[in-house]
Length: 109
Image (cartoon, rainbow, N blue to C red):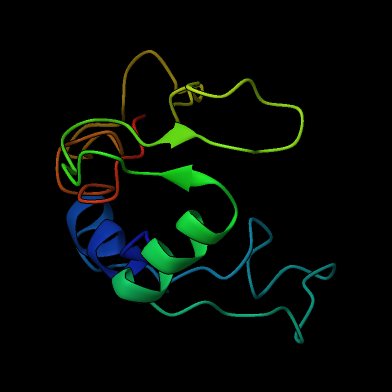
């Protein structure tokens, strides 16, 4: 909901990929044709993050949201995560942590 997956496909893969709904490609034998799809809905994503305790107390999307009452997470913990990438992206591809891919929500990669 807060990731513009079409923008990711356009920027990272020059629009040459389908927008994925799962990490398993549609053509794979184990793909689930009934997997739920989430549209890009920034307002709904913001409400959902707030409702589960990831709040933006300063209303600044350039600072991380923080935990407030999230089970198992100390209050004040910033909403940040890391993910692994290959050392060198294939020629012509952009890294998914480029600005704009996941911005405006206080979620930091």
